[in-house]
Image (cartoon, rainbow, N blue to C red; front, side, top):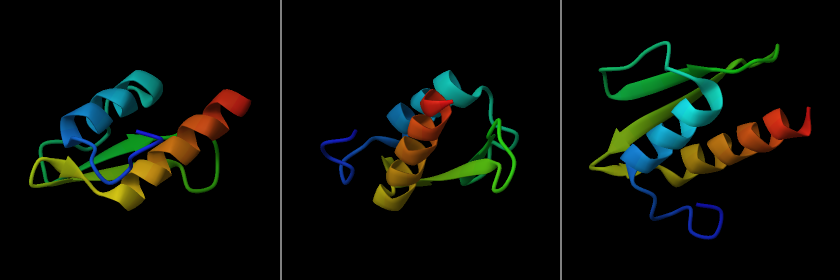
Amino acid sequence: MRSNQQNVAYSDLYAVCEHYFGKPRQAGTSHAVFKMPWAGDPRVNIQNDKGKAKACQVRQVLKAIDKKEAV
């Protein structure tokens, strides 16, 4: 995912988010919203775009993972 953010399957990104952040607080719609364990902007929002994840959302997830692992 880090080397090619443009070509990530939505299902793969969803699985990564579940692994790091737990079950989404919203799912079953076009968006899945995952709660973050810190204050501020405590969510990551991903969207299925014809089976692919949007590159900006892949970057958002990677940034959240890095922040979580830095703690």
